[in-house]
Amino acid sequence: MALLYPLNLRTVQFISSLSSWLQTTFIHTSMMDYQILANFLMNLLAYPVKEMCKIIDSFPTGADVIDRAFAAVSVYYNYTGNQKCFHVGGGDDPHGFEGWSWQASTEMVMPMTVSNERMFPPYNFSYENSSDSCLVGYGVRSRMDWITSEYGGHKIDKVLKRFGSNIIFSNGMRDPWSGGGVLKNISYIIIALVTEKGGHHLDLRSATKDDPDWLVEQRRLEVEIIHGWIDQYNKDISQM
Image: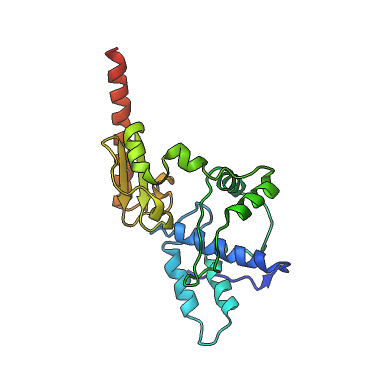
């Protein structure tokens, strides 16, 4: 497999555009660090994070940091080798990320920070700045407490155990978002399915001939659980 690195990068007007472009790449690639080929957000080879690291480490000592980063992100943006130029900043929204940005801004506010010890630029979350950005971008203020009020806040297990039912929390431990997931069963009808090698939404992707046995089994189990809920509902209705 040969990756082609486009030599022409369109003029970058703002350094923030380049920073965001790189950060998006590393975040999405870590989410889709599947052990099979992927076409969720981009066409990706299996274990793309490992491939990125291999490319970065292949550069000689003293090589330019941007050159290393650019070669690595080509795994995400140009695995197929058909891109002649990368568009940094702006552009269209083929995956509907604007919808997620709206949701994260208005009702699913996540106060995350980045320390000096991480690979990304340090960042301190500000509720005021977040709300101001939401107002500028969407014309509304953030509802900072909506998500915690609606779904139980920091005691989601206690709230759902009392009021929730028929929920499967599926988490793959290769997905960085699993750190905020429900990883233990809350009740017999609020179930956590945790897979060591799973990635972001992997079980919800279309089945392929290359799917590993554990993924096939996970999907089968999810369908079995849902069928059980439906059968129980129909049984309850028939006895009314």
